[in-house]
Image (cartoon, rainbow, N blue to C red; front, side, top):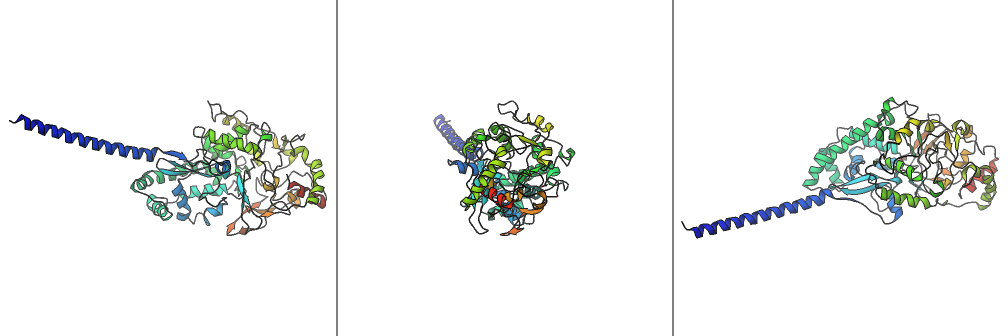
Length: 490
């Protein structure tokens, strides 16, 4: 036997095996690196400009909403469930963005995820005429947005048998999604089925709120702030909660100029006196959890909102008439609604103020006890929530942009609020962003405009009463006009 030849052959074989192993390892490492980068990437879209950050920045709520391409496909797949598409829900849109104000995007685990942020409920638009360009105002109540309609649509889609990868992927691709084979596998076996199941689980929690005919619709610009907490965050058996307690819709509030509000009674019923804690509670409504919340991002917004001034009235004012209204305001309103006023930020018992009691009754002492479990074990644990005795007197800064009025948005204009209850509109339409400069509010006598239907608000429905707050109803018509003109400047 020629050992030299055999040895050479053995050496060559080992060399080939080593080369093959190195090549295989390189392929595995390369593929692993590629897949690692693709499926471990977790990057939100970032904005240096604080206003853009407020409108489109992430609180790390992504994952609560459907992924980007599924979200885009839903109104195309289910036009019968949402006639008019997302535009019908009253989102606020801006040029240069393919998502509404209040939506954030994050690249994570191989796909684009969507989330909600503060601006979804606290930004809106104003226009002078139906054809005028919209003025988007950050911190303003989202009075055109139908948040109930939005979540009903998503959950109704999930109950539909058309919600399948085979039906959805072609729609996504028709809208511009460029899916490679790995993407198709991801959407087919993970994202689409998980999104559907997640929405079905959410629906099972919210049926007693959103799909019970005994609970009145919230309508555009309103939300039931605390009952969804009970259902989602605290696992209340909502079907066992009395219907009267499940009826708690109220207007979205403004959130500018927070500094003078620190330490004062916040929310419509003054149930918290910490701006930071109020913001933590509100963030839960966007879909974050105590574990996922990006505290740094929220702190950045909180600091900005402390100093954010109220928006200036954008239309012409009658200075002479406003001058006549100034002393009336100081005499009749300032004591309850100006910094330093004797009653400012104090709560007024419901039986005294006379406004609709449902929102007040929906926030219970039992809820305050259970809220203490949120953020438990951390420095963020809730300690300031309490059950108050009525509705709180608030500052009126930027009051022109906060229509409709009263906590439940039951009075369309400031001028209407100065009338006795029997003269206030009993039925009107909410959701229009065209401004009524004479009455100081939004146009409320139009049922449909630019192919978008508005919400018919009936003050005889439970939770919708336009009673109470009878201050100023005894003024003369001329005094009322002067007062309203002055209040445009606040």
